[in-house]
Amino acid sequence: MVKDIDWSSLGFGYLKTDYRYVSNFKDGKWDEGTLSTDETVTMHESAGVLQYAQTCFEGMKAYRTADGKVVCFRPDLNAQRMADTCERLEMPVFPIVRFIDAVEKVVKANLDFVPPYGSGASLYLRPYMFGTNAVIGVKPAEEFQFRIFATPVGPYFKGGVKPISLRVPDFDRAAPRGTGHIKAGLNYAMSLHPIVDAHKQGFNENMYLDSKTRTNVEETGGANIIFVTKDNTVVTPKSDTILPSITRRSLMYVAEHYLGLKAEEREVPFTEVKDFKECALCGTAAVLSPVGKVVNKDQEIVFGMDAMGEVTQKLYDTLTGIQMGRIEAPEGWIKVIA
Ligand SMILES: *Cc1c(COP(=O)(O)O)cnc(C)c1O
Image 1 (cartoon, helix red, strand yellow):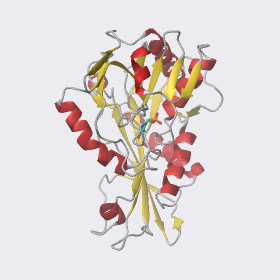
Image 2 (cartoon, rainbow, N blue to C red):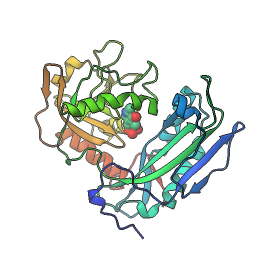
Image 3 (tube, helix red, strand yellow):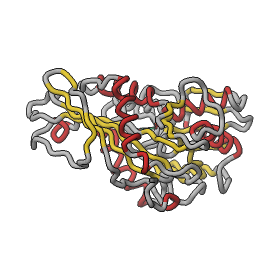
């Protein structure tokens, strides 16, 4: 029985669901893993995660499709990206096959929380891992916990398709150089002050520039960026210091193979932003959120629309059409769970 929740009023928040997946790494190996009803975590006061922020995460969604199935979108890419992040953070990889199996278990155990088709909501999944044993000298933990919880969510930005505003901050997005392409709380911790500051100044988010030259567009705190040129080419910044968004990679494919548009991943100097026709944030949480305005010090760039731009809308309709089963997906993009 689908839960009695007002799906249309859901924002992007935590709502407790029945089960989460838990597996522990000890003596060099992962245990078999289990589903748990306990949403709390108890650990050592000197756990690696608490002292040196040894933790990382992923974000993905399960959807109810037009024909009543429950599916996940490209979970293998989340599994692989988490493996890459773990290697950079000296954490043990949770094997790809087990990651996908755990996703399946959590979704199946919380099927009643998967929002109905057409509600605009979906079931957000949060895989994450952290060092649990006592660490006091600076070194990696030896014991870790991997968990996945699920929570139903609505849109990330309130206000429907009203375009959001960005400002270029004086801050860099990622903490130390070389960790911008990993999905880890340490980067998000460093983004909290810039985002609170952006909100104070009346902006929804930050558009970060590359920290080395401060001339090229990178991304926002938790989403990549796409632009559309006046002749309808889809452009996204190329950089090894941004997070390789699965949504962005999928959108570039959709632009080229479904919409017949040119799609370019290349450096985007900030000076070029004023010449684009459309701009949008993309990510699992943001999906595709139109940007109406970007401010950099005294310069204000306005894209001049009051909803999604034309190309952004086509990209959005096609991607969500694939995710919700209205449009045939490329091979391997959709994992049917129930
Ligand atoms: C998760 C994330 C994104 C979006 O990636 P998706 O795979 O599309 O969800 C973009 N930027 C950062 C910094 C992120 O952490």
